[in-house]
Structure formats: C-alpha cells, structure tokens
Amino acid sequence: MRTSVLQGLLLAGLAPSLAGQDIAAREYSARRDSLAARIDSGVVIAFGTPDPTSIHQAAQLPAFRYLTGFLEPNAAFVLVKSGGRVTGTLFTASRDPRRALYDGFPHDSATVTRQTGLAVRSLPAFRQIVDSLVQRGLPVYDLRDFATADAGASDSLTRGAQFLADLQGRHQTAAPQIRDAHAIVDSLRARKSPAELALLRRAIDITVASLKETMRSARPGMYEYELQALVEAGFRRAGAEGPSFASIVGSGPNSTQYHYQRNDRRMAAGDIVVMDVGASYRGYAADVTRTIPVGGKFTPEQRAIYQLVRDAQAASERVAKPGVSFKAWRDTARAVEARGLAKLGLIESAEATFDPPWASQCGASPERCRQAFLYMAHGLGHGIGLEVHDPPGYGGTGTFEVGQVFTIEPGVYISTRLLDMLPDTPKNRAMIAKVRKAVERYQNIGVRIEDDYVVTRNGIEWLSRAPREINDIEALRMVSSRIR
Ligand code: GLY
Ligand code: MN
Ligand code: MN
Image (cartoon, rainbow, N blue to C red; front, top):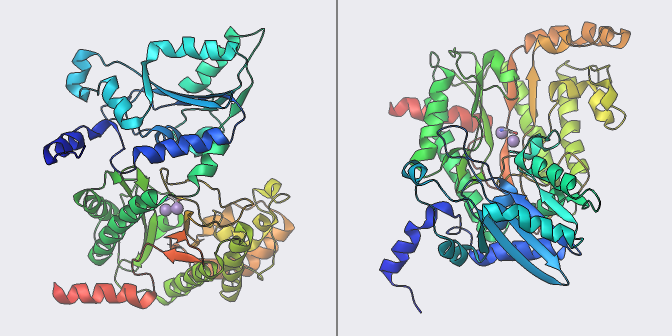
C-alpha cells in the first residue's frame, strides 16, 4: 500500500522518539544481524541513557542508538542468539502521566515495534527475563551506559555496571560469563554506511559554513565567547541540534591549551585564536578546527608555526589510504613537525629526546620521549560519528579501511610553561639552555588545523572545506573588510 501524503506527515510527526527517519529500520536490523553474526550464542544487553538529571533531555548513548535508533531514556535492549536463532527485544519505561506533560507522551509499544522492528516489553520485565536467559547458561555480552567511550575504562557506577554486578550476585552458583561487547559494536561503527555518511556530510557542511562566517567576523576587542555564540548560532540556524562537544575558542595564551573551554578572554590584535568546533546533526558529530589571526594578518612567528602545522597535515593526508597503517600515517606527520621545529630552534634536532614528565609511557610509545612530542602531546586524529571520538582508535595499531570517517588534526603549541613542567635532569637542562630563546620568541602561539575525511577506494576525500591556507585565511578577512 502506498502511504498518502497525510499519512506520511503523520508518520513524520511520530518521529521524535526514533532516529529512524534518517537511517532506515532495515539498516538497524542489519546492524543487529552483524552483531549476532560475531557471537556464537549469548545475550547481548545494551543499556540506554538514564533519565535526564537536569531539565535537558539526555542524548541517547551511541552503542544503544546504533543498534536500535530508539531515543527515549531508561530503555534496555536485549538480543538473544541461541541455537542459530536471533531475537531482539526493547524494554521501555512507562512514563508517569504528569511527567509526560513535561517530556511528551511516548509512543505506544505497537508504534515502536512498527518503527524499529523490535518486540517491545515493559522495563519491569527486564530483570526476570535476563535471569531466565542466564539460567539457560547463555553468556552475557554487555554494552554499558557510560556517556562516552573516553570514560568507559573507569566505569563502575553506571546502571549497567550495577545491574551486571547484581546479576552475578544473584547467580552465584552458576554465575554467567560476562564479556564486553563494545569492541564488537565499535568494529561495526568504524565503517560508516552511506546513510551515516550523508548525515556526517551534513554535520560537516553546517560546521564549515558557520565557521567560515565566524572567521570573517573576528576582530580585536571581541571576547572569545562572541565567536562561540556566532558559530553555535549558525549550527542551530542550519538545523543542527547544536554543538557536538563544548566549543573551544582559545586566543593568545589560551590557544596553547588543547581543550580550553572557558572562552571568556578579550582578544587583542596580534593574538591568534584557535576555534575547534563541530555541529551535531541527527546525532552525528563534526569536528573542525581553524586557527586565525585576530587582527587579520599572521605575524612572521605565527606564520612560521602555522605553515609547519599545515605541512604536517598535508603530508599525512597524502599517505592516508586503504591498507596504510595508522602508525605510518602518524609517523609521517610527526616527522614533518619535528623537522620544522628543529629548523625554528624549538628542539635540538628532529630526533632529539628528552626526559618528559610522562617518561613511563616511552617504553610503549618511544615517540613520546622525542623533544618534538612536547609541542604536540595529543593524537593526530580520531574517528567521528555518533561520538566526536568515534571508533576506530587511530592512536593504536590498525589500518585505514574504506568507509572510515576521521579527523587529521596536527598542532603545535608554544609556551614557556612547557619548559617549566620538565623534570630537572641533565638532559632537560641541556635542552632548555638551547631552546629557551626560541620558545620565548614563539610564546603563546598555539595552532591546530583539524579537518574531516572519509576513506575512499583510492585515498581520502577532504570533507571540511573551510579555508586553511595562510593566503586564503588572510584574504577572507580582506574581502569582508571591503564589504563592511
Ligand atoms: N574537539 C576535540 C578534538 O578535536 O578532539
Ligand atoms: Mn578532533
Ligand atoms: Mn576538534
């Protein structure tokens, strides 16, 4: 039966609790099948976001959203694979009628089943059903409800962690094996589908348009938060939910702090300002950084650092393609940076080492003991998707594969505080004696250039096409002063 225009509108009106309008129900179902295909038998339990703890509606957690598209809080999803058969059930919370006047009326279970293709049961049945599955001896695969993967390692207090601890307590004589299923779901999430890529492109396009407009608007005397307000207004005006992470607008000394977020400094001519921002569109995160001179023209020192960072980015863009290891890609950018830093006298030589405060990490990652690392002690990039730091991790082993969407974001951050934080060792004293003058010369220059890409069959496609060459950035401002 063809749906009438009116029915279509009614269905669209039902959309708020489901992400299904952007990603087809059959794609969610294919994702669940892929997950099931990767386990022999067992019970996968995904916990959804808890009730909001403020007046803001909580965003759905990424693994849960990826498998269900269901956006209501307080739900759990259970996938059972047993004897080759796979079933999926969504457990949803009923809403207190008065609460519904604030938060909206949730869909009835028949609607949710129609839109998700999942059986729906009420949350109070969840515990008993999991108990009965565990009694059948099925292992449990968990997808806990920590807010971001970055916080996952230290999680012990989420509802998911509590539920699993109780589950083991209840089944002491035949305690279930509990395995973490995040690695499996992450491996699926690493490769974006065409529908996901379309949403990411939209998030990135919105980010670029707003960032470009904001780059034209920066003037000495403005506060960092004015740039933040401009960029975020542009996101919402274009239909994005808002920022996908706390916007970073750091000028002068603040440009040297990677995740600066206060954004409350008044900017002066002669400062550089790092703007690291991203829109969230239908749950998908963009992440783009531009660094510009507040006065419109780079000083010679800013120009030198900027070009070095841009060269590192360009070099790593050239090597990224399917089959290339993340390590080779990282090493390329770091080698270009190290040569540039040595030329400017900021390190003793491209290969020179030092005794960093994080010396214990150098066994596993020898590059962290290179002097060049001091000026960029963060990763070269990461996946983007339902999270701003999405799978796969680009800091470890692994290779580029078609369909990955990721950032390349080299930076160089100069501050005498870097020298002050070094342990007092003979090696460090020798280094400091050689580089202090240069560090003072380039003091308070922080530059990061961050772009978003998709891996294609032959290489990568640059998605975030905001101006990034020195001439183009300076021209942007000249054009805008002429038309003012
Ligand atoms: N915007 C945070 C990051 O670049 O990782
Ligand atoms: Mn990033
Ligand atoms: Mn960023």
